[in-house]
Image (tube, rainbow, N blue to C red; front, top):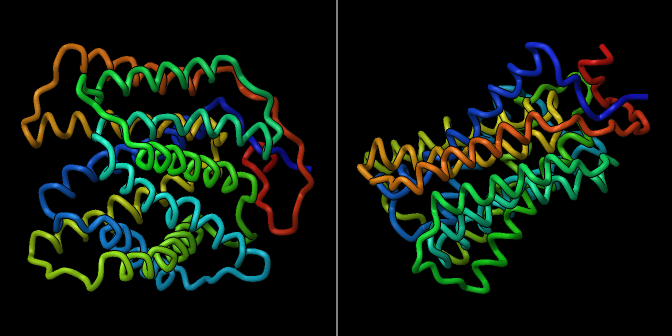
Length: 312
């Protein structure tokens, strides 16, 4: 029998958590890169360029393809974490003020707590619920504006996007990975599956690819390599070592990083209230890691399921 959570003590846990935190920090740079380097009004093409080339490169490096039950699992995870998440994220961003979209994305840890209760049989943790609410409040202070207006389609897309990513995070931990397959290969499978899901949507809705200049090529290379291949590798690696609900709280770092990057690189001013929001959001992130360890669920061991670090 194996458990779904790794030990929460010791340097290996802290190191895995710190490396995983680099992923949402990298994602926080997406807004600045998109607005400064990429063609406007091409969200699906941008999502496609983020996912598919990076996935194909990782497949070429690892030379491992999913087999058996993992063909369906890789497709499902790729759609949840990439294929559905990216379009829903961009749809919310285009239909809503950036602040509202950011707050909806910050709800992901709350979805993760609910999914973990059902999928991983983790008992609800009151401290983590409080941490999730604190995180949403902090992000709201950072990104919301008094004149923000709501759009029904945008709100639904934002919530579905947060739910999709949360479900993918929890299922990634539930299923683990096949024996002999590392996180780099798993990342390649999901990025490729997600990119193939996005490709027909991009060409049907947005038409042919736009002409790209040197700045755009550089922007797409950055998003594909740093913001996607490296970031998702660290994210999925973290999920294999840290409880999914703890990993989900790291997502709060993305809007925080976006605000800080906007301040440093784009000269966007931060008000005292926004600075307070940054501190509160970081506090919610830390509280989500420090909250009591959920009771580990004992699940049937499956062939090829990796044994957690605590059982090795």
